[in-house]
Length: 367
Image (cartoon, rainbow, N blue to C red; front, side):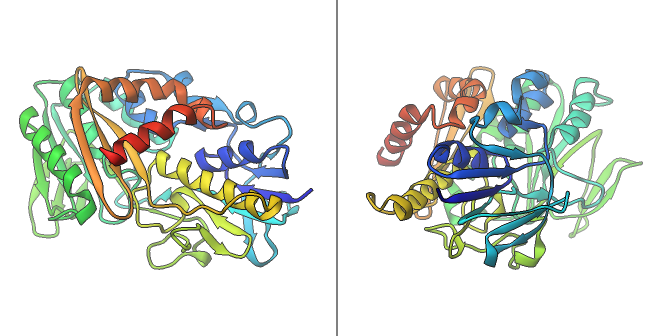
């Protein structure tokens, strides 16, 4: 039986391991005891759910036949399809999947909010506010889910209607594929009385006096500052100038027998859980195509999607691939979709909701 080594037990890594369980001998190298549902962190930050709703034990999410090594990967050797763990042991396979995610850079003592520990600090501030001025946004670079800062701003305004909520956006104009999303979010921000600062690139953060200054000298005071930072890979020796690992954007291949999926790769699509999921399915199919020889290989077309809370009883849906994009809503359907997936996510890690997910994506793509 062929062997597969997966570095990283997040969304894509777990799904790949589970879909190939029983067909290959699989080892997953993942240091964290608990798996976090990252899109649910906005619910956690705003006090809508507790940790038990957005975390599950890593071992429970992996099928029994999958070997889990609870350790950090300290070295990756792509040419050997091998990984060295922190215990010094080397794990080799016929295939190697790098699913290590993207790590937020620590800039101006800002660390993002995509880990449970960082989110816990923000949650405590949000639930015990020191003032009414919330400044939310991101630094320049590739971030996890460009919709997230907008979503947090909508949620803050809903939670504290009399708060002064501002969104800072580094780009003066969004990339072409993100124009529909940007227009929809700007319209909603205007309806909610949220101030939007476009082209605001942070140059200084004064945490003591609580203000930020842009490269153009503009100053914004804050009581609470929630800023996402750009991501990069923990293995910079494999990264390109984006800070992520280059792959063929259709096959997700780094080199023969080595795939990079999810936030760790440099595909030109937003870093969302849905993108990681669809990438994982392409990799699974193509590994089986090589081993079994009875199916055609598939290509990843850049599909990414996310549902976004936008009001008390409404949500929005953003969909795109490499060629086109759509921004839908707001409607109550997309809010319920987002809420429901907090529970459905765990089943999705074994392919258990594809009977719903795939028709939904196809319907959005066609309409």
